[in-house]
Image 1 (tube, rainbow, N blue to C red):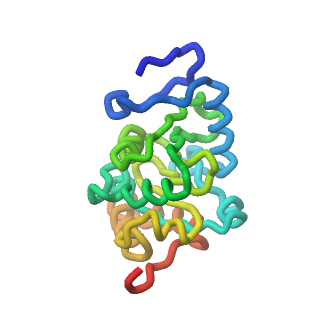
Image 2: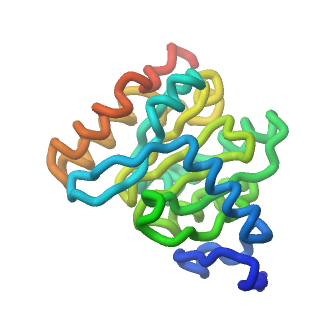
Amino acid sequence: MTQDNRDDLPDQCDPEIMAGTAHFPGRATQMALRDKAYEMLEVFKTRSGRQGTRLSNAWLGEHDWRVQLLQHWDVRNSGPLEMFVPLAAALQRRGITHLCGTYVDAEGITDPTAVWRIPLEARRISSFFEAHPNSFHILFPEDRSFAIHAMEDVCAAFAGPEAFLREALLPEFQGEAALADLKDAMDEEYGEAAFASVLDHYGPFLLEDPEDGG
């Protein structure tokens, strides 16, 4: 779809991967959605010294959210093919029809980028992460009832009420086993300090293992 660039924000992702998916119409609408995204976030300094974003402890605590950390590789490749099927179904049961997706670097560091309107299709959801491997990015419904915030191509934080996460994530992506997979990958690629810094922030909110038969 060709959009009127005079009333649109630019995007910096792979256009072939996002083919068939449109931006929200109008710069004003996109900027308002970006503002909603940043209200969930806080700015922090990464290990490399640059500024990045992450879901804020204040937002997580105020909304009684839990967090499941997963490898970004799984997210952008749909893990098993059906990874996002339960997420889409859980959202549809709540009357949600689409998601908002955009880059969320520290405000003022880079120019605002487009907000995509992502249909509730597993492949389209995965494609958003595949097309945005660089920097920090977020996916959320307009009512902000949950969010997936990704730290570059390293890890993704699935966050929302515990009951929703239990519905939206396959059992193998819940709790300690999935977290251990992320730790192993980050330790190998970046050293133990990298995972420790992520865990230090999200630790109080981590989703526990599902109950037997859950």
